[in-house]
Image 1 (tube, rainbow, N blue to C red):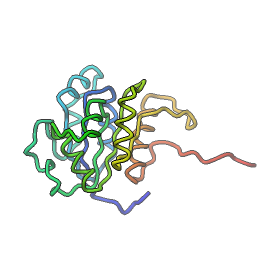
Image 2: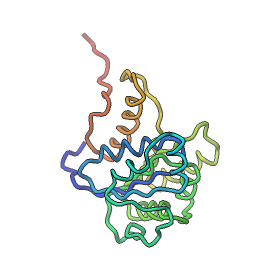
Image 3: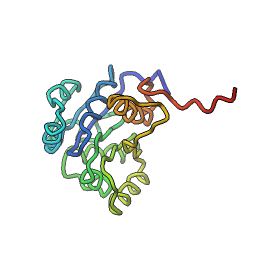
Image 4: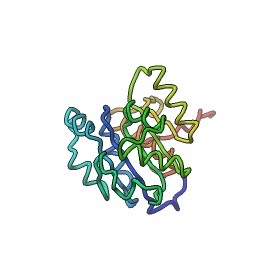
Length: 192
């Protein structure tokens, strides 16, 4: 991990699929970094179902946009940001980004990230996966995106839901080369 990566600029998008708490925890972990949050209309509904206070989530970001704010500064590739994370990422958003459909600020910003060669991390939250979803993930991977589904691991001994959330968010931070201590890393087998 690169400790010297400070004061970076991240676009963070939250879409309408289960797991809004992942976005909230991710924003909490970004600390001093500049954050530009895009909230889809459907994310508000999901946050309500999942008892995530959207006002608290939005207060964690430096700037907040709606999905229809196509005149936002981050709608242009001339706005220099370091990376973008879509957490959680609905299959609708994943499909739109994979197929170049820039119908809102989330998909437009993701398109800019891909075409400028920056890191795009998508956290697709659905199971089981359809063939179309798998093919769209393949397209995104070929375009340079990092696909980080929130898959459970047990080797670190999670006890609470917060442990599980921290593991998922830690994996996103790993994909961005950002240091953290959200979970214990696999140390290998002790040969003594």
